[in-house]
Amino acid sequence: MNFILYSDIGESTIDKSLGLPEYSYYFVLKAFRTVLAELGTVTLVRHPETEVDPLFEECRQRGEECVFLSFSPPNKTQIDLKCPTVSVFAWEYSNIPDEVWDDDIRNDWRVVFARHGRAITLSSYTAGVVKEAMGAAFPVLAAPAPLWEQFAGARSRFGAKLPPRESVLQLRGTVIDSHLLGLSADGLIAHITFPEAEDDEELPLPPPAPAPEPVPEPAFELQPQLTPEPQAQPEPVAPVKNLRYRLAVTKRHLLTWYREALRDLLPLWLARAVAVSGRSGNAMARAMMGYERRTAPQLELPVEPSQPPELPLQPSEPLPVQATEPAPVLEPEAVVKLDGVVYTSILSPKDGRKNWFDMVTAFCWTFRDIEDATLVLKMNERDLSRYHNTLLTLLSQLAPFKCRVLTLHAYLDDPTYEELIGATSYYVNTSLCEGLCLPLMEFMCCGKPVIAPRHTAMEDYIDDRAAFVIKSGLEHNVWPNDPRDLFRTLRYRLDWESICTAYKDSYRIAKQQPEKYLEMSRHAMARLESFSSGAVVKEQLRSFFQQAGAAR
Image (cartoon, rainbow, N blue to C red):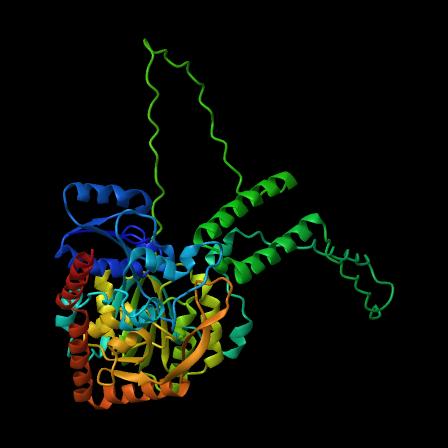
C-alpha cells in the first residue's frame, strides 16, 4: 500500500506558522506518518494538484494500491484527482457545512465526501456528525492521532509522579509575568508601544514660543527701587498646523485604525504585502515632500586617485555575485522558574473557541489570595502585538491578585516542551468545542491530570477519574469557515462557577491528597494508552483500508 500525505504546513515552516488556521494539522500528519509507514510506503507532497496523480500512475503501473491522505479540512481538499483521496480532518460542531457560498462547491462538505467516497475523522463525535449528513452506511473512520509512543521518554521521567516543587525552563522568546507588571486599574489607560511601531514618524512638534527679551538693568540708581509691576506674559503661540503636521496626524490615526480594526482579519500573505507596500509608499511620499528622516552626517573618506584598470588579455566571464542571506534574528533568551501548583494551557489567543478569558478570570478569582498557584499560558501566535494589549487589559481588570499568570510567547522545541510538561501539575482546557486537542492528550500521555469539559472530541478520552470535569451546555453558533456568519450550528457554553470549583478541588488534591493525585495520573495514562497508542490506531487504519479495497 502506498500512502501520499499532504499538509498545508510543513516541517520547515511550522515554527513560523503558529496561530495560523489549521496549523495543528502538521502535528496530526506527523503522528500518523509513523503508523502509516508500518502499513506501507509513505510519500510527502507539497503541491498535491501536480504531484499526486503522477505518483498514482507509477503505482498503478507497478500494480500497487495508492491512496492520497489530505490532512486538511474537506473544503480545502482536492476533489478532481485520479488518485483515491481521503480527507483526514477534525471538526467540533454539531453538523457539517451543507451549503455553497463564494461559488465553491467544496464549501458543501457533502459534495467532497460524495466524490471521495469515505473519510477519516479524529473523533467519534465528528464521525457521528458525518454519518448524520451522509447516511449511516457511509464509510468513516474515527481514529485519533497516535501520540502514546511519541512521549515514552517524557512519560518515563514524569508519569505517575508528584510534580516537582520547583522547575526551571530555558527558552527563547518573550515572557510576561504578572508578578513583575505592577498591575493596577491605572494601567488600563497606558499605551503600549511595540517594536513594529518603530517605523512610525514622530509627530512634528510645533515651534517653541519665543523667549521674552531680557530687560536691561540700569547702570545706577537715583533713588530706592520700587517693586516693579509684573509684566504681562506673552500669549502662547498656537501650533503651526502646516501640511507636514496634518499628514503626520492622519498617518498616525490610519495606522492605529488598521492595526486595531483590520489587520488581524487579513490573510497572513496579504498583511505582509500591505506592510511592505506601506513602507515603500511612505518612503516615496517623504522623498516627494522633501523631508527624509534625519540621519547622522556621513563622514567623507578621502578618495584615493583611481588607477586605470588593467585590460584583460582575453574576454573574461563576469564574476558571480554571491547572495548573502540576512542573519536570522534570534529571540531573547529567558529563564522561567516555576513552583507551587502549576496549571498549563496551550492555545491560540485569536481562536475564540479556546475561551481563555474564562480560564484566566476564574483562575485569578479563585486564587486571588493564594501565592503558590501559577497559570502558564503558552500562546501559539507569532505576533505578540495581536494579544498583548488584550492580555494586559484583562489582568489589570482582575488586579490585585496574589496568584501568578505567566505568558510564554515562544516556540518551544521538543526538549523544552517536555520540560514544561514535567513542571506542570494540571493541564487546563476551557474550550467551547474541540476537534481533538493534541496538547491535552500529550499532557495526559505523560500522566498529568486535567481540568476540562467532556464534550465534542474530548468525550472519547475525558472522564472524572482523570479530570475535573467542567459543566457545559449547548448554545447557537456559526461555522468558523463561513464568511456569512450565519447561525447554522451548535457548540458548548461552559459554567464559569464550575471552572472555579475545578480549580479549588484540584489545588486541594495537589496540596493535601498526593495518593489521589497519583491515582488520577495513572488513570490518565491508561486512558490514553488504550485510545491513542500506535498499535490501536494502526489496526483501525488497516481494517479501514482493507474494507475499502474489498468494496472496490
